[in-house]
Image 1: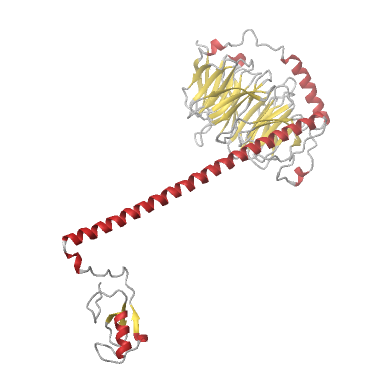
Image 2: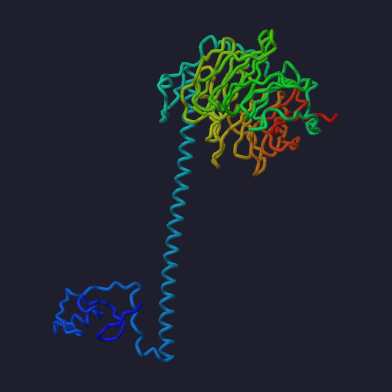
Length: 507
């Protein structure tokens, strides 16, 4: 909509309207007229500047073109002026764009530098803590859980962790002396599978349809050493099953957990009943004992100590202790002879996502979400070592495995690669890249330490120790959640979906 001044007949640049007559005027013209005459030029009524009301026009009315641009040369000149103005505006925008890019580059560089400095400081801090812990352990002083850091602690953990009871420590030391004395002389049995034989492994047997169909999936597997062919599984259906491969039947379905079962284990020792152990996402661990009279597995202990998901479970080489690791940033030790808790660690800095005991029984390795493996002396609770890969994308260490000779530790060192750590030097002996899309679910060493297995979303794989050659792949069932080597390394057992698959020498 356009307005026209009642005096000039042209569109006004600053339009006002008379509140008495309603006519529109150019402000500068009507103001001059009122000054000279004091009346409305159209109606003749008395008019003051206070009677003028501004008209807000948007967009503002463009001034008419002067008569000079009615010719073609004038039009070309006007277009040239407008083009020049557009070029200048474009140049100014480019300058502003380059300035913003430089500011963004500087900000990104500063952020990257800050990240590197923080990573270096964290590494130096961990190294200092490790050195302090080693010195304290050497002179017989228990290491403080905080070591100067800002660690959130509960009232119970605020007191200095006393370590394991003396009688338990004596038992561990006795086992350690007995096992470490023969470790260096330990050699694979003559009938043990060789690396060349592992290369020929093929699928030999499948146990289908274990656990419930919904929620489906086996999460963990444990083989019996005392009863060949018997194994325990834990599932997403919250149940622990005991199965006999020879008789092809379920021996027991053990219930009690209210969430996914993360780990299962079997405790088998002479003169004591077989125990089935489990750890769950419901923050508890459970123990069932075999009753010789009824042949059933009866519940003996439910551990409700932890406040977070239980992510690690192991049977100590003494066969009388069970260990647990939890996302609540603590680990605990429990006596399997009287089913009591003997120790819970002070609250650490990081949640524990995996836990495993050294074959000699004195060192406990714990995984964390911060790419780090922490190794503790289980007797005193002191931090003995920290293993951290070079700077990279952070990942969760969800699985660990010690070699049987105790010299090496197998652990992920990225989301798709595994490292073999030399514990004597506290450094990586080798790293194996499994492929960009490979997701690691489980790592395990064979008892001979000649080869090890890896389970992941693309199936299972076996690798030779020392040469690091890939020996075999086990991809028939798709994603593999757990992998275990059978007796004398002559079989590889893996869990895929609701199935337990077995690979071995061609029949």
